[in-house]
Amino acid sequence: MLHCAKVLNVEGRVYMPLITRQQEFLILLGSLLKWTVLGGSIGLLVGASTTVFLHGLDLGLHLIRMVPHPFLLLPVGLAFSGWLTLVVAVEAAGHGTERVIQAIHRAGGMIPGRIIPIKLMATLSTLFCGGSAGTIGPCVQIGSGLSFVFAQLLRFDELDRKKLVICGLSAGFATVLGAPIAGAIFGLEVLYVGRLLYNTLFPSLMAALVAVQCATILNAPIPYWSSLTPVTLTPLSLAITGCAGVFFGLCTVLTIELFYVGRLIACCMGLRGPFLGLAGGLILIPFGMGNAHTLGLGWEIIQQALAGHSVLWYLFLLKIVTTSLTLNFGGSGGILLPLCFIGATSGTFFAMWLPLDSQTAAALGMVSLLAGAANTPLTAIFLAGELFGIHLLPLAALTIVISYHLTGFRSIIPTQLLMDSKSSSLLATLGQEIEQVAPRLQERPRSLMSWLRSYRARLPFRR
Image 1 (cartoon, helix red, strand yellow):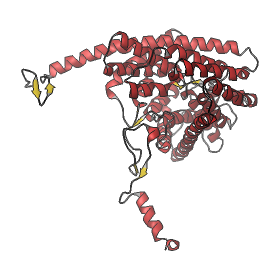
Image 2: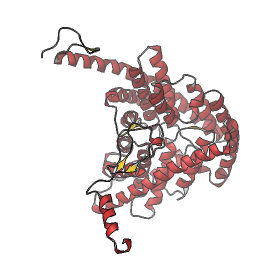
Image 3: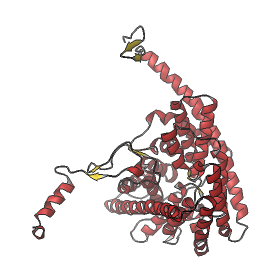
């Protein structure tokens, strides 16, 4: 292969010499070795720190169960969390995944080191008192924060710093659920709607694999997922699964809209920090008195639903409300685990009305809500395979894609960037944060919408 002998300078741009195929291979091999070391280092760091956090949380929740009605402490817990996030680190407020994506898009992956201890304290304060939140978001934010500190110590440039922060994001997700492949894909997919960062695939995969292995060796409290009965693919089962996908899409839309209604109510109240947390805690107490299962992490209910046991049909509706109140009224934690709760319990509700196995419906709902609300269909498909077995993949893929499609230009993570439209009949400005997207109808010849318009115009009562 021919190559230039010296550096070229054309119109002010510097071009390095062309290289041979052998040189290209050596460069890529060196890059592979580099990211094996860096990704593995991030995996060890995040896996160990996440395990310490999960063990501490597990111990604290075990002790707090000895207190009768711990949800009565919610006003104090949310007030303390609100004070921390108002005075010390506002970046630790709400759910952690959104803050990490915001830092990657708006600040070049820079995450202040003070966020790590503050996020820990705010999350523990919220969860110990019974707030409805999860552990995935905090682990994602803590992992990304540690990765940023690691990148700063080694003086990496912005490009490599972003890659390392994404590695921390993937490792944190993978450790909590025990799903390294889904975790690796999550880090690439969650930043953009309609685009994947393939150049970060290997580092993210390496970090996720090492993090899960590290957590397993350190005996992290990773949940055990029930094995499901294989479902035979028939025209009837596909039709029922398609209906389930539509139902889960509607549940996803409801979850996102009610979450932002909660944020709007919190803004309209005019309270900040500890006062907002105090008000939120007082509002949540009646939910705890009515049904304490709607508060807290909700692992027990998720496990019950996936095991085929009966759960109250309206739990998913109450969980949507309590999660919105917790995270919008001073609480700190994750949103992804409550999505799993909502999905699993809505799946059992769906199975009451159509002939679909309750366990299968709960598993499909869990991954479909995650796919739709976070706009991460590929992550959800891999997660279904890793947690529930490869035999569920055809049905899971169908409900996941339908839920993702019906969610439209919504997201539980408003700072995601839209890079591709979900329909050629909807025109949207690409490259915007998804909460700013205002889609418009795009007229196209021979499209279904165009045919419906022309048919409606020909109706007699329209003349």
